[in-house]
Amino acid sequence: MTDESTEQLATEAWLYGYPLVTAAVTMDTMTAVPARDDARRKAPVNQFCYMRATPDASFTEVVSPNADTLYSSAWLDLSDQPLVLALPEFGDRFWMVPILDAWSNVCAVVGRRGNGPSAGPFLIAGPSWSGPTPAGLTLLTSPTAVNWIIARYATSGPEDFPAVNRLQDATRLIPLSEWTGDPADYAPPTDVPVPADADTTTAPVDRVHALDGRAYFTLLNRMMADNPPAPADAPLLDRLAGLGIAPGASLDGLSADKLAVLDTATRRGPQILHDLFARAESAKTGGWAVHRGLGDYGTDYGKRALITRFGYGANLDADALYPHATTDAEGRPLDGAHTYVLHFEADRIPPVDGFWSLTMMNERQFFADNPLNRYAIGDRSGMRTNPDGSLDIHVRHESPDPDHESNWLPAPAGSFNVFLRLYWPRRPALTGDWTPPPLRRTG
Image 1: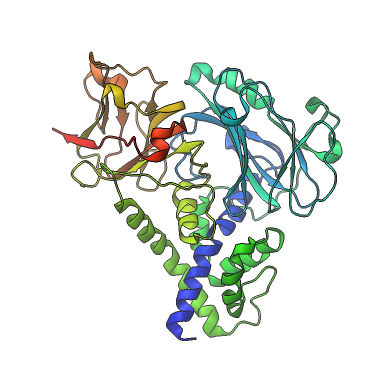
Image 2: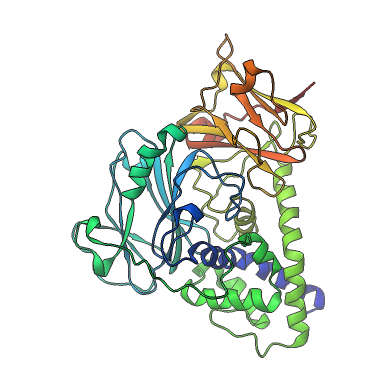
C-alpha cells in the first residue's frame, strides 16, 4: 500500500466515522447535567429536555437549527434496557418524533404523517435486547445503543408556546423496568453524576474538528463496540483494519507512520467536508440545491458525513425537504451587503401538508442575530400577500419600509445562506415537479 493510498484510506475512515464521533461528542455536550435543565437545553442520558421556546442566535449545540418547531430532545443509551416512549394527543397540530441511530440514520419515526393525532406508547429497544414486547407497547428497534430523539411540534410563535409546552411535558421516556402503564408514575433521577472534565460550552462540531488522529479514531473504535457498523460496511472495515480501525480495537500498537497518517486525515477532514458541500451545492435548480435521500444513507459515507456537518438531525424526505440556497438567481454568493426578494407566484407557494418556512443561517450554520430575533419566516408568520395572491419575502440586513417588515427575513451583514423547509411535502416537491423560485438581488 503506497503512502498516497494509505492517506486516502485514512481520509475515507475519517468521513466514515464522522457521524458516530459527532454523536458521541454531541451526546456528551448535551447530557452533562445532573438533572434536566431546559434553560440550557440539556438533560441526562435517557431523559428529555424540553426547549420551551424556539432557539435564538446563542444556540450552537447543533448546526442548522430551525425556528419552526419546539423540540423535545433526548439522548438514549439502550445498552442496559429498552425505554418506553409515551406521547400525548396532538389534535390537529403537526408533530413528528424521529429516532436517529448513532450513525445518523433515521431508524424509526412516528408522527402526524403516519399516525395522525396520537400514537404509542412505544418500546424503543437496542441491538442487545431480545426480550418479549410487553402488552400494550409497540416495538421500535434501533441497530445501535446510542440514539437521538428530536421530537418536533409545530408552533405559530410565542403565544402558542404554552400549549406546546403542555405537549412536551406529556412526552416522556421511562425505563422498561420502571414502566407501570402510567407515565406519571415515573420520576426521572435528579442527581446523575457529571464528569468533572465535561465541556458544555464548546460547540460539538468545533470539538470534533479539534481531535487529533489518535483521539478521533480511538473514540470511533470505542463507539463502534456498542453501536455496530451496518453489514454493508464490511468491505470498508476490512480495508480499515490495517489502520487499527475496528470495533473495540486499540491504536496502541500502531506505528508512528500510521498514526501520522491518521493525524493528517483529521486535519484534512473538515476541508474535505467543505469541498463536498461546495460540489453538492453546485447542482442547483434556480439557485437552490435540494439534498434528497436524507436520513437513510446506506454506504454513501461522504453524503452522510456532509449532512452530519451541515444538517445534523435531518429527517426522511417524506417528512421534510430542505432546499438550500447560497447564491442568488445570477449565481452570486448571498451577502448582507445586498438586498433580495424571494417571489412566489400564487400557484407556486410551497406544496406541503404540514407547513413551510424560510430560515436564515450565518456562515457557521447558526442563526444570525438581528433586532427582531426573527430567524425564519413562513406560512404561519402572518405575511402579507400581493393583490394577485403572490408572495414576496424580503431578505436583507436592514429593515425595509414598515409596510414590508411583516415579510422581512433579517440577514447578517456578511455572508449568509437560507433553507426553505418543507414539512410533510406533497408529491410535486418530492418528485421535483415543483422547485423554489430563485432569490433575486434588488437595488
